[in-house]
Amino acid sequence: VKLQQASFTISAPDIRRLPDDSGIEVAFAGRSNAGKSSALNALTHQKSLARTSKTPGRTQLINVFEVADGQRLVDLPGYGFAKVPLEMKKKWQKALGEYLEKRESLQGLVVLMDIRHPLKDLDRDLIEWAADSELPVLVLLTKSDKLSQGKASAEVLKVKKALKSLNADIKVQAFSSLKKTGVAQATQVIGNWLSA
Ligand code: GTP
Ligand code: MG
Image (cartoon, rainbow, N blue to C red; front, side):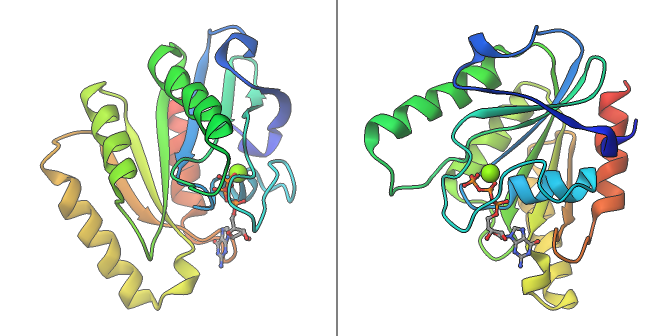
């Protein structure tokens, strides 16, 4: 699998507008501003494949990137951002929920959390849901460049410990789109899911 070959396929407001639900998808989920779109760009070695922004709530649609025939990466709308009109929030949270519940081709979930504020309630809900659904999870603790290496490693251990009792297929690693920390390891995990 060559993630570099990813190309934009479609932005869909809801799951009905997505490509056929066949093949394998790996989705990127997390709070608004966690660094999902930046991580997608780092992992595909493309500067502006996914749109990033300083303003939380940038990704409001389900964005699909095809890596190869039947292998897709999906950038999901962020959750947990208060400052958007309620109607809008409802719309994309519905799209997110429907995607997670109904998408058969979803075979792996990358959950991104800012390493300085991991495991907020909605993050826990998402990870617990994935564990219950037997969906493998890769937790990326993003923006690790904001902490010293020692503090970052301690945070990784803390999160691993907190998730251990779920007894599920959950990997946790530090990640920085800026410094490319964890890119090689995450590429391997995602590549394995896509080629399973
Ligand atoms: P939404 O689409 O709004 O849900 O956000 P997102 O999760 O896609 O976040 P995005 O990738 O747009 O990044 C949000 C902000 O965090 C931007 O200002 C990025 O430049 C910054 N950011 C992302 N990754 C990193 C990183 O590894 N290090 C640092 N220092 N900043 C980062
Ligand atoms: Mg985004």
